[in-house]
Length: 155
Image (cartoon, rainbow, N blue to C red; front, side, top):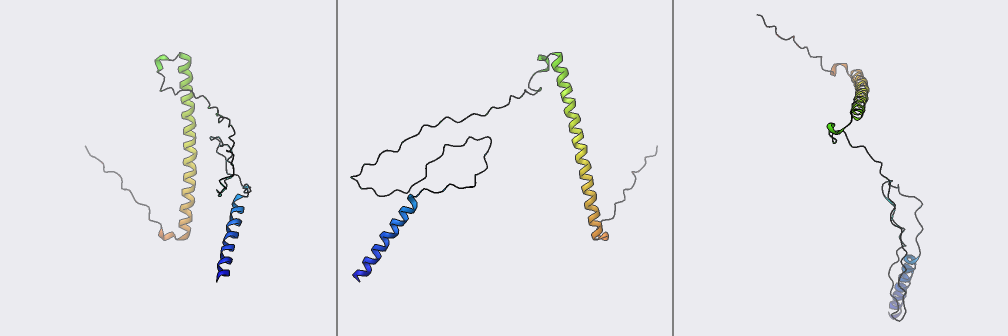
């Protein structure tokens, strides 16, 4: 029975030692890099974490060295012109007013073009869907509603 206890104790010590060595070995860095966010600055690399081990109190453990880090880089932000609604029209020159009106009309024209293009695509997709449904079961489509003409008012 005494040898059984010694075997168990030895096995436990060996397992603890192997576990400690496995944790103390540096880990290989991952080959897959996470997607970098262009708006964030990467942090300084962190040293690998090592599991704490019981040290002999008579041993002197030097304090870890601290490496100075550079301050995070700042990203330039493009300067945006203030919207015309913020600036009072009375404070603008005639040229600024004319340019502002031209810019608004160009934006309006572009928006109308986008709206027409989107409506065209929407109609095409709705027509395709309607044809697909009618090909499946022509009887399942509701009959078009007949809208009666508005009543006439006689004088």
